[in-house]
Image (cartoon, rainbow, N blue to C red):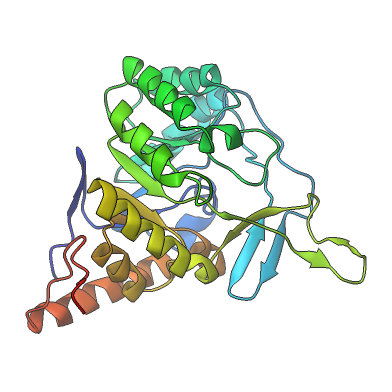
Length: 304
């Protein structure tokens, strides 16, 4: 098998596949279908300072080639996560654990990082955008200066691996630049796209809220372009997240500039999908190397 290890800033992964935040929960039941240790790492559900019940149901709606969710960042809060959930994750995941963090203010972001900075986690992913809650970061995603200040303040208390999860809409490049200049090691590109599903017979939104976040294969071409633009502009480490459902998707993202890829909705479709995607990535990379073609990061040809 080819060597799939990758370097994402200061973080070393044995392969470029991680589980994305939100779609695997905290591994409840998933370990019966998937050996989490085969992956490069995992990103936890978003953790906030205080518990959040999330939005009332219905919270999921299928669309052609996609899924709209309005979960509302449901989570038990940082105290329960640190004392009860994290020890269990550390026992069964033999690889890097990144903690996704969000808050309704800089103070809440900082409080979560402060509470977990001395735990044996590999780093943090700051969720500065989420399209399916009234609060929880949406204003940050539209405000480069707010993101700059947030990252600077986090850097004052934490020196380990830090990625900023971008919104796919708004002043994305400006927010990315602000995050990197303030000290972020990497960018996660990107969150779900604002979307709406309609219940025709009830004449109302299909979810409990008017809108949610679209994920799945439908968004892959859009996010692929975003990753390409970010790499061309900044040449910074990128964790790609958007519609990845095959080994080919992984290598396409790497060609466009991704250092690693996060698998989200594909895990909901079939909990064994991440292992299948890893096998496909290995097989494709082996075939490409035999043809003397090396899909290195950001090596998409621009002269065609």
